[in-house]
Length: 292
Image (cartoon, rainbow, N blue to C red; front, side):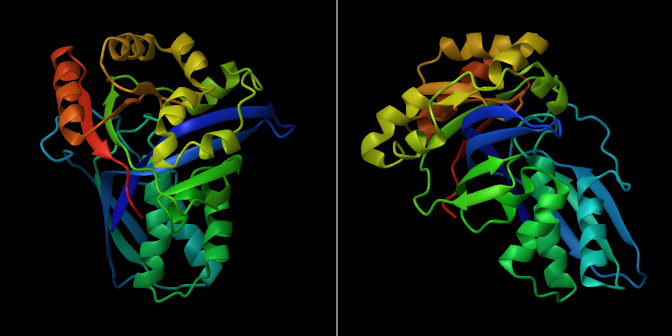
């Protein structure tokens, strides 16, 4: 099963909550950059995970941090949660072919966890309602609920666990770039000042129809970009590079460090990618939004 990455086209940090987390308003869209998970039954009750680093098509992938394969990995956490919830005695062998970079703001870990819930439900013949999937996803992480949804574009609120699917998909071409460095999500949120923008996600959603796309690029926003730039000079460097590119608009996704530009076509995106690679950016990919 394929686990897609995502981009945050709009991200507003509304307030800091008493539990230490933050209330968000964000619009996320899935893109055609995927990890792959292979699920195989075994003869024991154990769930094992093997990670294989894969290149994204013909793209060079920068060095990845060593990823855990034990109980701290979101794939194992999702499998364990599902086993306990459904009272399953069976085990599984999971192979994760990793193409989405870590510490990138692309949601790779969350997508892998969501795909694990769906994949093991099929392998173990567990019938879960969509509400049950969302409840399990909320226990695993803020973005997991988006990836268990049935649409490629959604508005997410709260910590990200309240998901309102959008039936009208985003239809855009992007060039995505990531430096070799990453960022800690908690560190970025710690530096964030909530409530800096008054534009709401509802205003952004109204710009999604094709006839309003020029308004969409004007309202592109991410409250986490400024704190990320304070913490990581590579994000500032990417912003400076994108300022020189003829893209419609550009910004960081999630808590970084990946950065994207909106392009008019795949040809336009490939041209921008070539310029970014020539500038020494180690990870560059041409993608488009998923349709479902």
